[in-house]
Length: 301
Image (cartoon, rainbow, N blue to C red):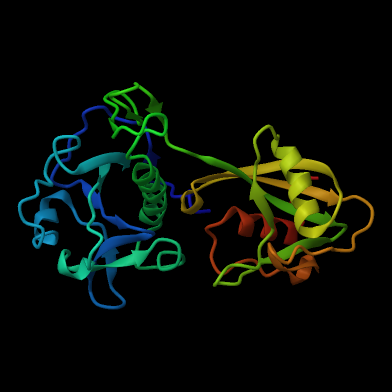
């Protein structure tokens, strides 16, 4: 899965007052796209710019000091991968990025980096996690209680309101991935609103006041019109593209196995025998691992 980057390790502990070294990396995120330097042409290597070369990358943005960490400068500390710290440029311009960046291009974290062999797996996971944090920083520039501009907290990963002293922490959305089984068949779905159509499982966000197990039962009923039993936990996964923490569950259909499809959510939902399960094009997702686990008869009983 996307977080399986051993022997590398992403360390998300916040380090107060962390300042960048010349060899640390800078992530420039614009929407769901991250800037990567390109080396060796179309089939070459992609990489994040180092702090030492960042002024050259941003040569068209003269007069901005990118060498200091926030709040004095523009680089916000995110996390480390092994011994390399990653910082985020907090102020990416909204105008044409080609006029303000040099030596590379912006790539979609969701589409371009999934399954690529031009960027090492550890950095693909780093890009997804950085995107999660960048969305939170972007959406929390002002206090939701009083509207005042917020500032980075000095002691932990949070932002503070200097007016009403409200402290805001990164948002993580709990959600479930559900492998619904019917004997030796698994319910395989395809989402109705996705430009890239791949095999998937029933999924959904946990509502306020709801357990994960209740989410499983509700989502399966809403999307496929099925009652379920024997709900059992499998594994979890961070999924930065939706600011999620995903909890994977298997369960058995209870009674009538006829699918009543919610076409607003799903394009299709069909029972697929073990031997016919294909999985997804890459091995990044919990969904894919659960499908292949069932195919091989290794799902928790």
